[in-house]
Image (tube, rainbow, N blue to C red; front, top):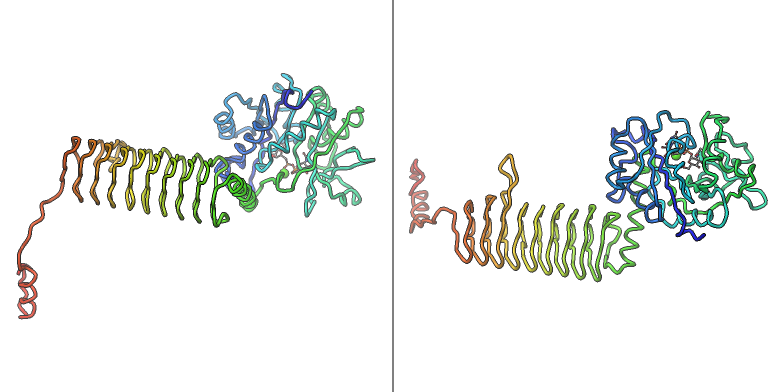
Length: 456
Ligand code: UD1
Ligand code: CA
């Protein structure tokens, strides 16, 4: 049967305590590319065609279970009460295993750089008859890894570093940690595993020797060291981020995005670009950003949870926060911040503005220094600006408030009441002129007579 026709249960081990992260956050909830480590693994597992997913968590990792459920609502959550080894952890998901699948994938929750291709190749090995398939890689320093013991070109055992002889420690090919088990034999193999090793743990890796004893085949699928990088420290988290950013930048360039300094651009795993998009240096993309064809993101902009429409121009120095929608040809200039706000097609806010919880109609213009006063200290309110309206510079729009289509707001206004379409609203003190005042002041000063009132 071809891989894509086979059912697949993916079991993700996420019971690690992660104390070396020096953090109160569970290890797998740290992020790379704007996604949790767990989310990254779930993404790969889904892309590799899993039909069922089980996540094994530690006894007090409700937050990990919640993240798994948020991302994959029908994921099964299994709790490993005691940390007694990787095979013991897999057996915590016994219910899911008992429901059966053609392929069982076991993945560690702290290896966020695994690819769908890695997993697909492991599944292919099962489709070709292996009962166990493991990922092999050749690390620069193999200390700590399980060694893949081969004989006559066949994988016969995995020896954990602690239990390996000096001779076995010379083996360069190591276990990357990803494993695929044939659903038909998985439970039988797992139940035979014993804790007869230095660490007194139930090692998943013993499945290889047991498969050989049972006359079943074991296969190795070689992967890159980067693919199976595990994360135990903040330094390793940063290294994984660097690898992921390289991959994301490469993919964006291959998809046709123009970046003259891609090494300065930070992308999220889910950033989406249309055709002929330009991203200038030093732009940061948080999660949930889509940029349509021909848009330009100028330097030093920060975007997250935002949709940038066709041929729109963002920045330099713009901040698009979650819930932002920028229409076709719209312009968001320097030091403009948007949040939960829509700029309709052709709308402009070219300098220094805060547009929060509102909508700016088609072709409307927001002058420099305009603020949507969306927060009254307790609640957020909306501001609606009509089509073709003109908001003069340095205006404060005190929400909830609306400005009708084609209306004008005089500069420096504080707008607290709705403005009808095509009206002019002025909400500021009228200017007064005192003819000759400055001249009189200078004369008084020259005569050394300073009046206490300061009024010449
Ligand atoms: C494991 C492999 C080793 C491989 C290495 C690659 C085993 C026995 N060894 O070693 O061959 O070279 O990964 O990185 O599998 N976990 C649980 N519950 C447990 C024990 C572990 O959920 O009781 C989870 C951990 O959270 C972690 C993963 O399983 O995500 C791997 O466990 P870890 O103890 O880090 O195994 P390694 O010693 O790294
Ligand atoms: Ca590890």
